[in-house]
Image (cartoon, rainbow, N blue to C red; front, side):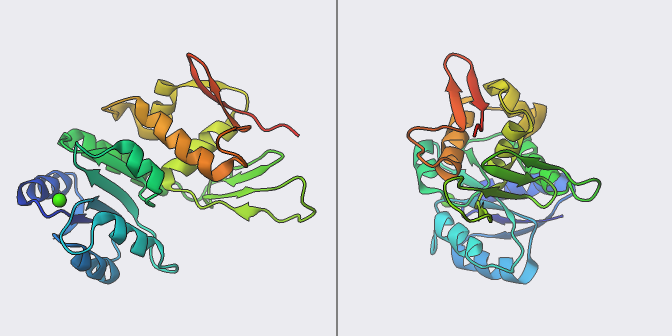
Length: 237
Ligand code: CA
């Protein structure tokens, strides 16, 4: 499993490399955005740990350019951000990153996040698992999600462009329509039991998912907030 580490602060880069190598990952390293694009093209890593603030091209731009290249390997991208930066800003930008970590983070937390992303990506084969509701078809093995407009006469759906986490969140919701989930249950589904950090991360991912699947994200009809508890997914005719 190959991981590209893009980080200009030497100490953090070394910590990342040591931690991930010890876990058995094959690491490539670089410290600026242009090198990152070049190494990505040559090595086609499975995952990229990408610092936001970089010399040359910043992490957001690197992420955008990698996502714009169809046909290439679609890596899992974990974005690193400095503590002072607003998480809400990352969310609002829809960076194309699959997950993010706020510095300073513990090596354990990093490994748990990477493993969660890759574990989901390795689920291939076996029987197909497809969820259908009036407006959605989610194919867990193909990792595709389509949305249908009931008002339109067209029978084909619109393919939703979701990150790994957003897809996993939608698949979780749609696997049990009507079920009320609290935040820690959703964290358990998305990151497993090795989660460290703020439960608020669930709210930010729900907000991102709503922007992509709701017809009107400010007035959601599919992912409903259950006050004092969490969220539930409903899709009625
Ligand atoms: Ca940096």
